[in-house]
Image (cartoon, rainbow, N blue to C red; front, side, top):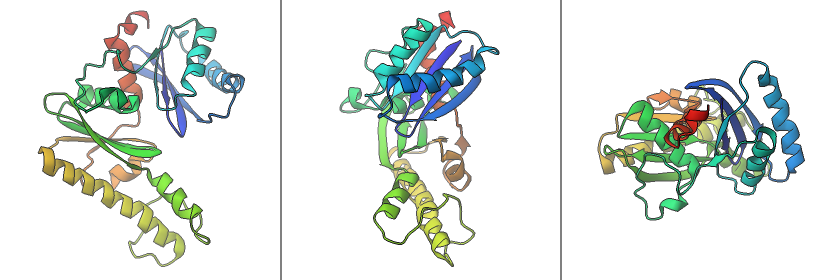
Length: 259
């Protein structure tokens, strides 16, 4: 079995693949203040629930945008399973040519998403990942990673609004019945959710104006379903896109031979 970790700023998503099939997935909150023993207790408790149904992991691949946590996860995997985890970064085979001014600075999650969308949907393609930040990542018709856009995620924008105002409450991020809100909550949902959907579609339009038609626009991430359902530009939603990209990278780096 291949063990995959997507270490993000808000959550750590863990997946287990048996060949090409995602056998299980779970997530735990990212907290750089936790000790390695705390992470071990939570992580292995969740993994042990899967142990009776699935094979012992024989390979592991990690994408991380939280550098302080990465060595701890690598060490835990080594100690528990005697596996040397592959951490996505410079020198790892991805099948992509990265056409940015500083390829090494591109977040590993963005590269992994690009790998997945190219393999699953073809190119040109655009991934919109709704996380702590919302990233837009473009794969050209030649199959190259061309770059993209980074914007504050909707939950991040909402938190900033609430934190910097005296009376506005925390609200659920859901689509309102009307754009013109009849109360504070509805008005905030219109501003944050509908407004964010306009931002997403507007940026996609600008990208298309610049590079030409993009037949595959794919959403992923925690709020990806909500915004893909109300977007005129996003045609597909894949909640497992990043984990699938990690599986593909494992295959490209011959880890599949041990899964």
